[in-house]
Length: 444
Ligand code: HSE
Image 1: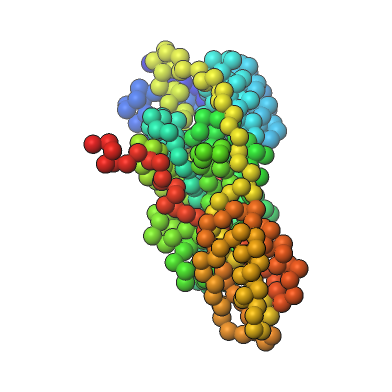
Image 2: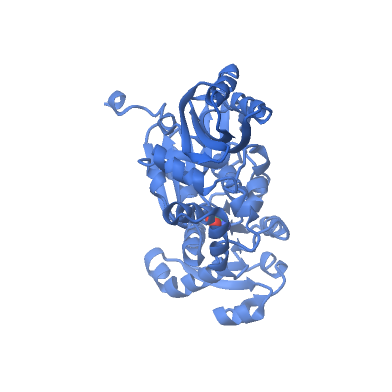
């Protein structure tokens, strides 16, 4: 057995968790797996942090000391962002080193290209921690579920927004109130854009779709990305009355007209397994044609949960290295590129809340607009009482084309008597998610 040397760049929340987890379990890994892991280099800006973690003797402020160190077998990149993260990957690969990372924002654009460089250099790129924190979803899609044709991936992959939606629902807090509280508790960043506007979830959707469908999907390929700013307390309440909960979902589906990849708030039936995922927790629901429905649930962020995923990747690489074998190089990356369906061709159901003049004939007029644009309504109801001269109405459509709903909303904006279109939220047909799974009855 030989020692496996780790070079780590970034010893903040996740990196610090990794260092401490290794200190805690080093001897267990030797006993259980025959793997002696050593931190050979630790790169950060702050020497005091290295001191605090007990890695001052291997501390450097220059990441090139890590990627260029001939003793380092595995480089861990935990600084996030684009540069120098991408340079660290490239330099590590050029030096024949494997890279483990949690960098969802960068990988959601660069994974295909970097995997190609890893392949050419005979090393691996591993990123279990990039999606769902401690949840082993990347491993599941790459290996345990590899025998399936994956039909649907639907994930709650952003803990901040799930926490916010949960508190809005449970405590009747407004979006602004809950955002301010989430910021003061440290769940939401001072600039909450990446979480609240769906960008973080979109990066994770791109990675999930890439791995799940063995194709190349980047963040920029996903045209439908909406966050939760448009979800009001009113919508959360009406959803509950209708038997739904609102969740920010990252959805990736294989359809006959291409891949359907999108991020937006969605109403899902309260009895669906994703509906019970509350607070900062994440879950990724996957339907494979053979396995049927499955869901992985757990902590989507945080020091030790994310370090758990990083350590899993490190041990996967370190086990052969420790026994003088070479980990398999990265596979030839994603030769297939499947088209992503445009959002306008999405076939879904839609919840729409409108403020209209409180006068006879207005409901018929609104219904007429949808009818003329090819959309049939499943439910129309008045919500709450009259507010002076206006009233709120809630509509739920049958399954229809998104393009037709958008055309109706455009027409309603110019309709006398329609004071405001307050919200439009997609209502997911969760039964359709599992269609095309091989039926148990046909298997026996
Ligand atoms: N900002 C992310 C979240 C952290 O709220 O889930 C983990 O990627």
